[in-house]
Image 1 (tube, one colour):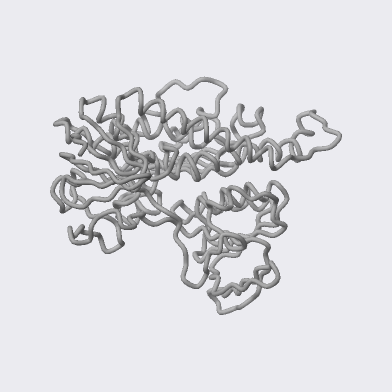
Image 2 (tube, helix red, strand yellow):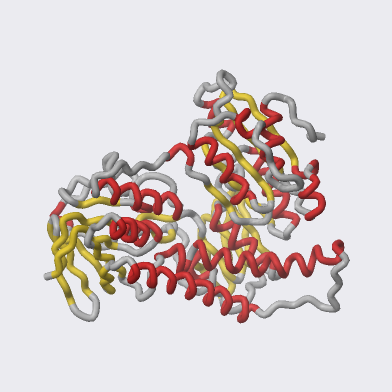
Length: 465
């Protein structure tokens, strides 16, 4: 029997980051992962491969649609999907290999197999053979899997999840995307740029509905220009596959029904915690009403010595949230003051333009009864954005009217995911819109628009038009 201070089940962003931090703190650490590669869904079949395909297709889209305006002329623009997929796989291989090196460098013991908690302090790992681990602490970091709908059975061929949609060997002529959230919009963008007729069906009245309406309206307009069709306030009631063609029955909120044919259907209705047989039911692990693992402020479950982080506990299913929980949890186990500020976790949709947010939206702040001042600056007034041909979108900053404290921000722009970091940093230190407004920003940069939006909170933007 192997003995450890900490055994982590799951080597995604939550698990491997927790393992590295634990090793840095002197804990003898084991990392259990059922797959051959480390990195979990994010690195293998999620965040990283999707961004690789988004980057490749953005280059193609620029060459095909925008290059001529810059004086860059091509006789013919085409793409090699197999090479795109090969590059994506190479990116994944490089990064997962890098994590493997980090695990070895930090002296973490890796177990390849299915980990299962059989008793407090005891884990079995079933792989090529079965091993038993004795551990002072056990940390569950098993991540999530795509959610499905009972009336829309996934077959992995015609009706797929994001996993399969990342690896199509040919561009579907018609792609139906069910769900207007980050996954559906990002993968819809990938295939629309390559020529697929993409239709996004969303049950809610807006795509990406956790943003303010002015943001989602701008995003939908940009994606429509990219060739994506939207049917909002609409549900997919059933699907049939006939001779390789998927026929979807749609019903709008007003009662109107219709049929839609597609070659592929991507079910992108969110994700759910993955906990299949990961713990002996007799131990009585407690769950929330939404099926997540219930934990206290220190990430402890109701089972002594067992902790949980990442997608399996409440909160947004985001890799960076999971990473910070991994660090905070093991720091507390080591007697340090680990902490995650859940009020300022940024969220990004990696379309073109990107959409990023942090903190409260204007709508959410007003629903809470908070009087707010809002500053907005459009990129059409930005010198760098005009020069770079990135004028879609705007920065929107929400501040408390009583004291100017930053409550949140939303950015729709090329590179919004990078620009939001400034607002996150200022919010972490309890800063105000004035703090951003009086910070010198390099000229010309896209980041100047963040400053201008902060100035606009007090109605003193210099370059607003």
